[in-house]
Length: 76
Length: 138
Image (cartoon, rainbow over all chains, first blue to last red):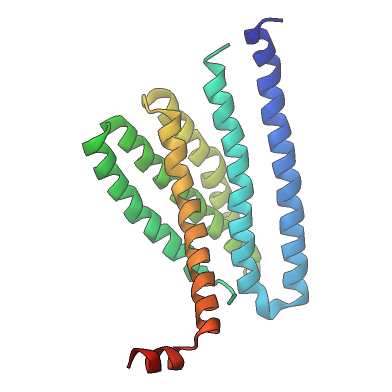
């Protein structure tokens, strides 16, 4: 199999896997944070900051995957 | 470690903005104008992304009735508009992806270094209380 053909199969799959992992991670993080906020409303502000930073980091991982795909798309 | 407040995110964004300006100047002068611009745009995009994420989560989580129009508007700006803008800039702007990614990482590096600095500061205060430190200095 040629490199271009392999990449054309692998790149969409890579973005899909990254998006799936990121979605699952975000879902778990946000649900845990919401649960924590429900249990301790007085700590909501502190939990919210942790959640925002966590969400940004998880989102960044997907963006890295997307950027890698964009870079490799030039080789197809 | 003491809990981080929302002001932490604002300080990270402000520091990243300053760093982006400095990077633009230094990289433009000593390396390449396009690469410096890519770093600057990447950082600006990262700051905008974090800002809209903070606003969106704040709008969803805040106590009281949910402002649906605000949430929808923020979600629209954050996801299609911001990501579309990044795609257009990278596709038609003749910027290198590497410079954009370096700029995008600056905001995370700043956040990490700020947390590490705070952690280190607290450890040092635990090891040597300020009163003892003053006595030694005197």
